[in-house]
Image (cartoon, rainbow, N blue to C red; front, side, top):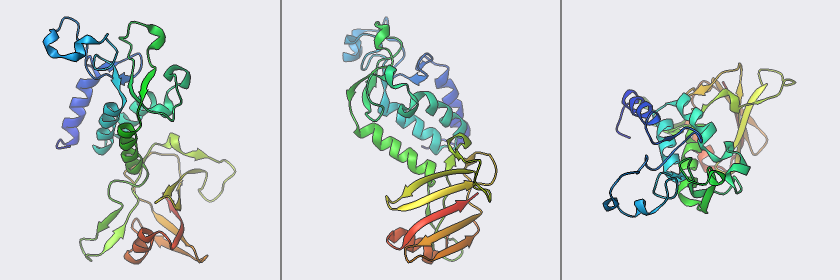
Length: 248
């Protein structure tokens, strides 16, 4: 958290080339090989390589690592790791359980039984889920959706997502620059849609315009990247707002 992006990138590249990387699974293990180490290291030496503390993949620790890539703005690296290291992109048959169920650990490629490599064991939801929710917030709304305007001293709002183009839905029949879109719920209540005017990644980019629909049926168009104070406050209160459309 205290490193700049350049230093963080250097560490990431070093870790990727180290023994912590499981190239076959495209994931990271808790330790590199412990073969030849002293039993004074503790209980990790009691397990077979690839199992529990001995060189397995601890999902919540891996997710913590991925989260920091996103926080550092290492978007290309983060989304590359996502495609091999996060449950929505893992083959369910290899994982051995529902992809909606996180595991305490995944048997790595170092495990002696090849039929169990890549399988998740000990269902556990708390740690991995918490890290993923943090990633989801950064991806969909950005690190600081609400902020104090330095000039006016009032609260304003800005949506600054970090989304690769491949996550957007493509509708070739749509018109008015609405062919590429992604949608989600803000505060579990407000429908939010992002429209791309052209195919590109949205990495730390603010919208050019917002359309905000109120629950009384009216709508307000906001030109520019920020939502002014009165609307920001109504969005924060949730009950007044039906939807937000952001155009990029």
